[in-house]
Image (tube, rainbow, N blue to C red; front, side, top):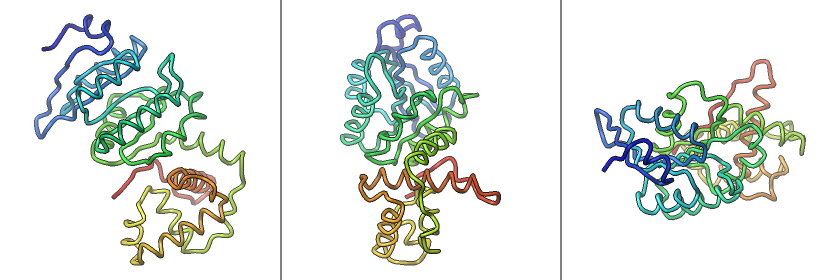
Length: 260
C-alpha cells in the first residue's frame, strides 16, 4: 500500500510509488539517496515518466541492501558515495547484487570529485551499468534514458566522466597508439563502442579467436596487460575516446554503450 511522501522519506526504505506506462511491463526501480532534497527530486522525476515503477525509496545503505533482497528490482539508482560508507562499499554491494541477479541494471550518480573512485565500478563488467555526473543532469530525460538503457542490457557513461577519467589515465601513461596495426585500430574503435568480442567478430567477419588475438595484442602494446580484462577494455576505450576528441577529424564515441 502506498504511503504519504512524509512517511516514505523519513523511514529510509519506505514506500511503494507505482508509475505505470501505457505499454509493456513497468521497469521496477529502487532509489537510494541519502540526501533528502536530492531524493525528493529523483522520485518526482521518475514519477512523471511513463513505464517506471519505483518500488522502494531508501535513505541508508542498510535499507537499500534490504530493499534489493526483498524487491528484486530491474534497476537500482544510487550515488557512488553513500555516507557514511565509502565508494568501495557501494561498488562491492553492486557487484554482489549483479552477481546474484545479472539482469539487474545499475545507474550510479556522482560528482566530479568522485571520478577518481569511479573506474572500479566497471571492473566486474560494463553490461547494465551507467554512470552519470550529477551536476550535468539538466532534465529528467537524461536520468530516465540511463535507466531504460541499463534495463535493456546496455551501458552508458556520461561523456564528462569519460573525459575526466581519461585525463587521469593519460597522466599515468602515454598510450602508444602508433604501434597498433590498422586492424588493431579498427578493433580498438569497436571496443570503444563497447562491443563484445563476438560482436566484433561478426562485424569484421573474422573468428572470435582472431579477435581475442587482436585484443590481447592491443592490451600488450598499450601497457594494459597487468589489469583485469574488463578493466583493460574500459581503459582502452577511454584512451581511444580521448584520442578521437583530440584529433580535428576525430569522431566522438560517447556515450559508451554495450551492444550484445
